[in-house]
Length: 311
Image 1 (cartoon, rainbow, N blue to C red):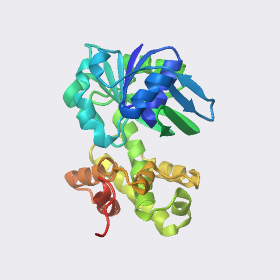
Image 2: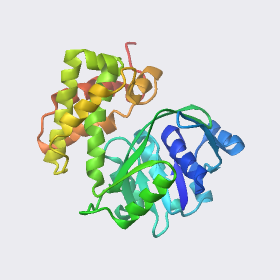
Image 3: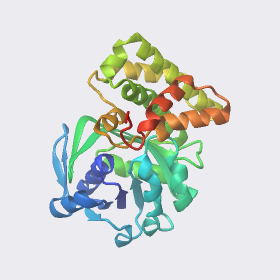
């Protein structure tokens, strides 16, 4: 299968390297030092599952790649509009475009360029970092993508989703095909927005969130708000979703630091609009109160474009 990966950072670089190592014709769209490193040395992955070097084609111009069978869109949410505008040269009549962003906004952003029919949506579960140009470091062993149809969910998994899942699984990626990608995206958002928002707002790792009763209660309340918004929007999430994400939160490694916290501490831009902001906005539209999430959003929004503080 011909695959293009738009955004060869921590997530896109990892999945692109896995597919290239499995023998697929992979081209990554990268820039700057990362582009130069991949062209010169390849894409190196350090992982508990085993280190490996892949050599995908690397370009800064999607037009040099041309139409492909599958596009993985793996840029951060705040870069998505610009990345989506560069997709047309990669698109053919049957090209599938799989979004891997946090939150629930990405499929609609990409569909404005690629069309709803082309778009699939996925939730990626993986802990990776771009440690240096051309070097992706994976911590842990999760490498899961839950994905499926977003704009036309059906009662069962569609043939193209099944084909892509089979391709991903053969490349040692934990593919979870689903009939309704909206559920997959909200399942992740109900967990990620509270834990990331609380960790970043309090500047603490997961262990402190777990130990402090007030923070643990805030997590449960925020997850409940997110789930209530999803239900008000008609998303068929499971009735026990809040209980499930709470158990997952309680079992998470104490030293884990969500990427939102890491970005805040490093002075980078934050995905606050795609996480806390998305829930607050949709809650307002649906008439669902979101007081905990609104507070986290208000605290973090000043830092969305980088560090903000007293003059």
